[in-house]
Image 1 (cartoon, each protein chain N blue to C red):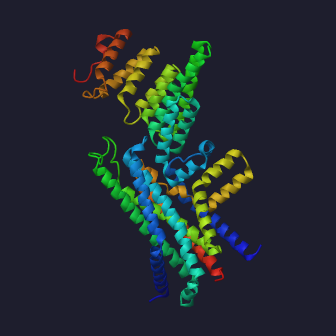
Image 2 (image 1 turned 180 degrees about the horizontal axis):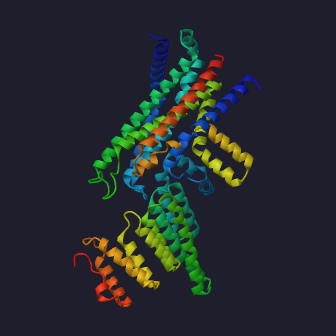
Length: 260
Length: 278
């Protein structure tokens, strides 16, 4: 090895040593910054549109790139192109994972609109309807749930994403137990809308868990703000009374709302 | 005056000279104009925002443009300053005086750091002014949504500018090292940009080779990612654009990381320049 080669090797070794020595500094910074884009997501993204998007991401123009791609998603959606719509939804959320609206609206498109297009196409081919429709709805709800599971990696404290997952379990898969679990998770998130806790109670009742539903609603009602129409304390109280009748709760043990 | 103080005075003198020389070049002014133009384009395109608020959109575009044009300035200005001195042989006149080679290199690096500080300062001030103007045009926007923080914390925007300067400083130090080793400015510029891209993506390469299950390539990728600085660590702009606070510990960690790398790269640049034939 000549002197320049030795010089280059010495520099490389010094850099490796410096990098290793700086790992204790870099580690906590990496943890504090949160999750980064994984290799799998980048490979999928680059397979779809090439390196231009990665360059845009590196340049920091993610919001602009994602917005323009979202417009393209709308065009594909308006044209009823299911393959392009689904691919673009995944692409937009890969480019900019920060806005919740891309995840939520993308999941709704995949679960409801694409399912409807597929059902219409199946109807035209004359396939047996009920079973096929059910299978398509479940498949699309599953795809949307996968998307939202990915969203949770970036938005772990988002009540809106949990509620959307609950809705997909309820309307897409008609799985009441799974939907109830997601509504409960949403209800426990910060700044969760009041409906999440109320619907959780209602789903418990529909599953036949009346005692649990009653206990939940009794616990919930005193915390509902009186002046907020979205909280619907009167509806919750009516459900409590209804459950008390069904469970034959004695008059002395019935729920007494605060202030009565 | 002690010898160390004299050396610092000489480094400072060379840094000031390099800074003035860099400012007189067209590149910094051109990049500032392009930065302004890209923000004007972001203002025009803000109606296309679909996933975020206008202020977050402008913050994202603003930080993105600052990072991109700042990186061009850090790489090109460092290489131009160094090779301007060596190719025109003015370095020989400087070194004929009682100036050590290490002082010359540290002075050059100091000049580039001053230039980058001026660029980041101007860019951050312009961005803050733009955000201030847009917030003023939106009644009640400065306070933010109920239950959430304000849309823009100007202190965090300034801190983001400081982090950007540290990142560009590391990139300039890398370029200076390559320039001291290389024979042509083009090579130094190309390698500077390559290190920037690799520094942003090497964690992906490491993940990829580990997923692929190839032991040797995974070890190679790990070695490379250890040797090069991780520029992803300077990515605090996303947090600021999302309205999240910047913890003091995070900023101290980033500053330590950047200063340590600047020290390592400039020491290696001095090592190369000591052995270089002029």
